[in-house]
Image (spheres, rainbow, N blue to C red):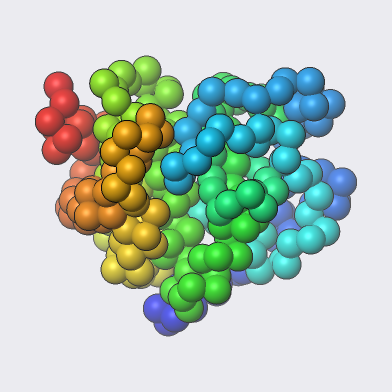
Amino acid sequence: MISRRNLLFGAAFSSCGCCLALDSSEAWPGSSCRDSAELQSNGSSAGCLLAEDKREDVLSKIKFSLLDKDIRTIAIFARIQSIMEHLYEVKPDFEFYDDSDGPNAYATPERVTGGCDTSGAVIFGENLLLSEKNTSDMWGSAITLIMGHEYGHISQYKIGSIFPAAVQKELHADYLGGWALGRINRADLSHNLIQVLDVGTAAISIFKKGSYDYNNKGFHGTPEQRKQAVLEGYKSGFSGMSVNAAFNTGRQVLGLP
């Protein structure tokens, strides 16, 4: 049994031998279709940032090396990625990037790193990772929620869902992130990937990322709205709701058709 304090570490470390054996020149988690030169010529892309901010040239800041990541963190992210792919039925590229301008994460419908799949890409900020790790011993819960939020955007892109405003799109992704945590904690995944996550820690993390800057075109929701979206999503996930049902229910919760 893995303790709540060590929620992701044991399970992540135990079954990720393939990702730990990658050559340091490969971009984790690896793709036979990867072409890093393509990244340098793409420029910026349309996509969604986790936190309100000016549009960054995220793609130019992607890091392809594993050398500056500790092996346990790599294993954790590989396991979370596997979980999200299973839950959302998508397979986007995944990379870390230099978010020294401010903690953030990014989802885009584009194949920005040259992967084989058409699900887009999730790009996670190193500064965001360090910030969450320094905030709580239960940081894995917050990281899993953030990954669920970004994979929620990938699901939005896949379905082609339309939102009247950016805030509704972001709150819907928050709902889906909460749903993912609920599904995981319900322990009904076929490969029994990880142990219980703390939704309270995750909700506090997303609460801190809200604001009251209503006039900002990138407004993501108030702290209260973001936290409530996560908690509502968590309930749907813990009930065993499918991803398609959660997607539609999340829209209904926000008053959307």
